[in-house]
Image 1 (cartoon, rainbow, N blue to C red):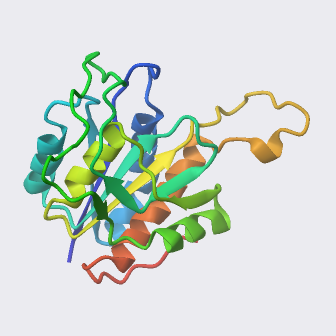
Image 2: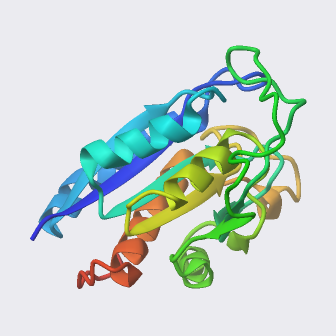
Length: 219
């Protein structure tokens, strides 16, 4: 039995010339692709444009095409200091923040007649605890923002995918960067550390999804 996993990243947007989620996905493919295959997981990845227009349609079309059993979106939360796994997406947009095309949303709601909140089936507290146990700090979150991350998450939660998760990452630490005295406790995780955390989130999503796949967390 092969289980299809879709992991997505986002392209650059105003204020972020190079989105680290793209590098994170590439490292995940390199370091975990074979391990996933041995566990019966077919890893698919996609890079999503940071553009308001058609964001919901793109997310749902991608899911309809690949028919993944588990979806995990990765987004950058530059002001956060730790990884956060999102519990829900809200039916809201920010009319002030421009997208990658310098366009604004022009509306306050993602779906005028949609649910105010869509909640994931993923056990966010367990995923956060599993990541933090042997990796970088991670906590549950109930606020996915009001930008493209939230918009894409909201659309995916309204799709036919059995299990959808969203992991926000902070700006990664670059290896070799000199440390200031006493700064180690505040040090952001590296891309490698966040790749391993993402892999653990994938395994956890499979374990607790409606797929009922028996997999074991990596050591």
